[in-house]
Image 1: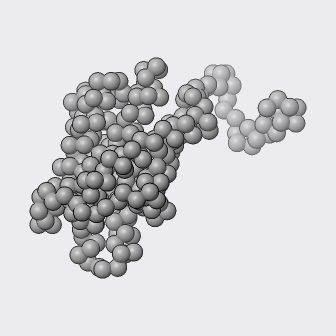
Image 2: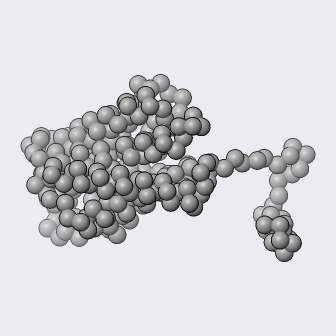
Image 3: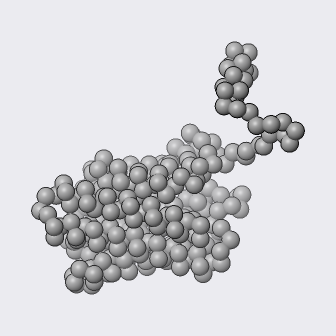
Length: 257
């Protein structure tokens, strides 16, 4: 990332704002169109998948499209020695921008649907099974983001992250917030997507534990650092797929792998 810090911070604030506006706004729209909770969740999750994919594609080249304090902090923790990830100054700027953007996104969604601009949610989400759902969702998201990076496939993040969050809406009991900034923002709207302020701290604690678990799983599965891709010598043409398979088979037979 070579953009100046001010532009990267603006991208993080704008991206998180629009993400929460999508989540909250689609939730409001869904509840106004149908009373079927399953259809409401389907509409909410579909809008989130599409919106998140677009936002990561659009803003990723500027800031990395974290939109999530646990992703920012995990990137700093894993790359602080190699100098490839965000530094302390970046983290100190990104996290408040993400939280401020999330709150602004909730207020914006309420304004678009003529709701009170700030009306704290009464939707309690503090039970243990919901916290377990958040731990699983955040661990899975962290494993996905950093697993893609360590295998040189970070370019797949827009589709992969959006698909994971969309599926986690349905397979986790918490509907997969997996994001402390989004959690805080959603406390400011007493709508379908809201969360009671008293439930925010337990959710963030579960998300933090999930991020730590996700990083541990990333290390177990992919190792500690991003692999270096070694190009073929200049005088050696690239191998065809069948040649690669044949050479691997030969090495396996000889015990070379």
